[in-house]
Structures are given as structure tokens and as C-alpha cells.
Length: 102
Image (cartoon, rainbow, N blue to C red; front, side, top):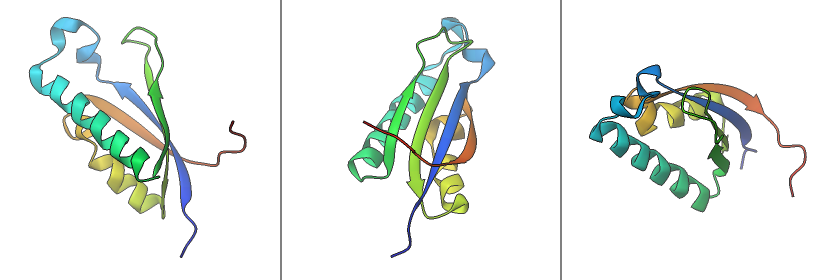
């Protein structure tokens, strides 16, 4: 079995959602689906860690560290993310390696 690679993702909220009034029910639903997708990924051992900073929406970042066979698989995983598909968040992908964990 080939060794998996690790990737770091940085999520940024769409600027139209900085104010609470900009949110739709569809936006909220995509965030719930996003959380479910990441939770399932964690249970499957693919997601190492996921979370967000507690800054206001304008400055908040989401962080995801996960494993995939290669960059193409990692990109496919992110393209399937409900918040990315819905335009609620944009995401950057970076090759990564966890060096120290608790």
C-alpha cells in the first residue's frame, strides 16, 4: 500500500458573508454538510485535524490537515466540499507534514 501524503488547507469565508445578514439558509446548510464531511473524514482516519480561528468573520481562517494519496486526490476531496461548491468559502491547498503532535 502506498504511503499517504499530508495536506494543509486554509479556508477563507466569502466576503459577502462577513455580515450575518448576508447568510442564506443554503449557506448554513452547506456549512453543516461541510462539518459532517470533515467528521466522517476524521472517523475514517483521513482528517487529522480541522477547526477555525475564533476571530470575527472578516479575519477568520479555517484549517484542515488531512491525508490523501496525492495532490490530485486532495484537490478532488476539496472540490467535493459543500462550502467550496456553494461558494461559501474559498480554500488553499498546501503540501504539508506534521512534525510534532501531542
